Length: 115
Image (cartoon, one colour):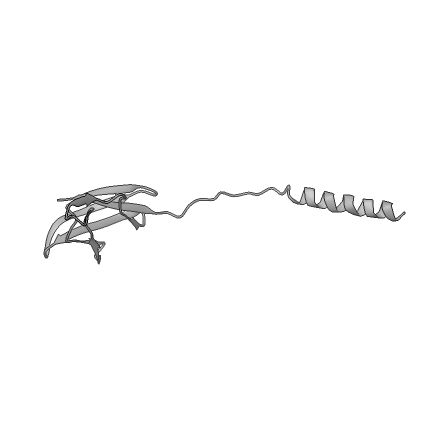
């Protein structure tokens, strides 16, 4: 009798565990909207103003090794920004060297060549 009750209890518990995991899940998962700016060219000493905010100091795309040689950095630097319309202004030594209006889509990267 005890064995039968234990067997029934185990069967009920097993059924509950098996059927409980079969729920239907509905919906979609979408990543947050974001876009990226990638500044290339002569970025040393350049400040970026994005939509009048800033400045963001753009560093060089190289480093100087112990022997004084210029070496390219191994990775690119991307600046995260919201998708949409943005005004980008680049300034070097107090003078505007580039001003551009960009329309950035979701999950896109826009390269900006710095003169």
